[in-house]
Image (cartoon, rainbow, N blue to C red):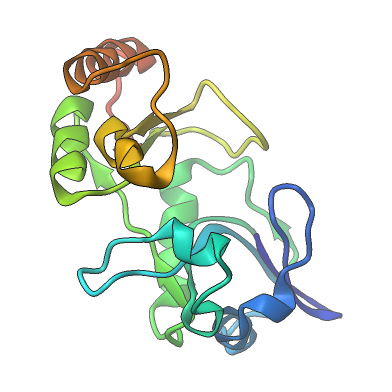
Length: 193
């Protein structure tokens, strides 16, 4: 999370660690936003030459000076709590405040798609870690929520990012994505970030 308030900029991890000093490019970008205050949910990343996030780089504390924030949600803006607003509204507002942002923060745009399996398969072919799907119309909730689903690329995990679990193969993972996507909300497609 990137917070800008009366006392300055703070970058806080989901476990409550203050990493403000580790990512100066993010701090500079948030500091130059045309807002009085904001709370942006996102993930700090370093990318390879193809634009893919490489999380091991941050775990090894390399290239921190070039790391940037992929911003995917806006929870507060100029004192207004936006958590009860639908995801589409929060993303639109986030896009507007990031329109002329410095390089330390980038909008993580969403894809509105009714086939999570198609989006997931494409992400896997690109070598991405996976996808996160958020239910359209959903409000923000801290922690895990039935309104968002995370699907991990098992092939990418076998390449060293994380150990494989329960012997899942790609076919089983694809079938699981399809089942979970269909039961996620049969009435409305999810936005994939």
